[in-house]
Image 1 (cartoon, rainbow, N blue to C red):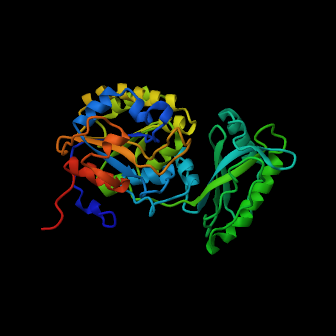
Image 2 (tube, one colour):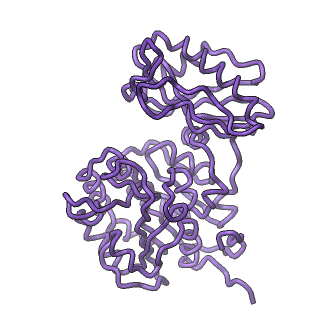
Length: 403
């Protein structure tokens, strides 16, 4: 029912649903390592869980499409990733609980280093320390002059070299190309509108970049900025409104907190380690219906190309499965938002293994949780957007359709 409002079938209940999302979980076979990261990892608890569950593969968007983290997560939560797609700027800003208004166009800032010729020498300014990021943002906010068409301009730090800027003004649209050329040795790109209605913001953004270049000129590393993921802020229907689920997000990275906030989830702050995420799940289990527990390092180690380190993260998560099972969730889903094979050092189009455990699931013959075995699972291969309705059905929260 991707194109129908299946939430009209949602019923109230007391069941508990846990989505354990290991970011970038999927891999591809590495001949030197004798398999994918999941195949090599020692994960007896996940394999034991798979043997009592129903398994399959998920396409985050559709077959062959490599997804960004935003649409991949929207799909997992039952939001059509194309219909609800939004730029990274809004997601990053929501992650720091930014005070949005309906007049905001938001972009993510990457502080960078440029040489005397203006060409980029480091796209991340040496992974600027967060304390320096805060100082630089305060410097910009203090000295920047807002364009005449704006009611305000707000600059806020996120983490390391990342920040956000909101251009606040009536009638603005945010469909702009990134100013990041995605490689060193190039000049930052000029802002460019993707459609007619967004042309009016181009001179506003160009003015901001010009001012920022002058203000940051004396900085040793963060002497320029790149803008990415432009988006007009929009409101989303909440998980509570759509699915009658009081939801909690447990994550360490701002963007995933941002996705959760946009969908009306409560968000815990101050958690930095995997063990603390599972502890927080236990401490809050009685208070919510739905839990989004996000594991970031699987993706990070994949993007680093560090096969062994990604394996270790999977093995670490595996040690917490027995404690999670003691909470006795009515539905437990373990999957990833997308694949990030260490072999590719990036997101990829490969489908992601998924397992769903519940009292009512039709158990299949999968006994090892990995990409190869999940091909044969009872869930088959489906787009991620269908996962939420399958989870709700297994939680006995969907009514019958029709007479």
